[in-house]
Length: 94
Image (cartoon, rainbow, N blue to C red; front, side):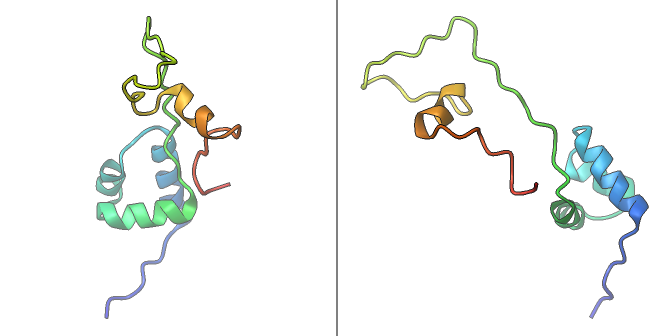
């Protein structure tokens, strides 16, 4: 059975900083010489979140009140507000 990986504070800082800067898990893994999945697991334990992508409404986009209209696009600003009055959740880490 393989030995457990011992994580250093320096490696944890690299994961947090790169992820906050928008790096992908694969890029972080290459930097640390580890697999993508290993870095994902550690990043989740550290709550290393990627920056929030703000999706602005498409200019000139009109939302119809017609009940037979097409579905709103993914991540449309109105979709979460139609379901709840709470702010959109940013993830499980606090």
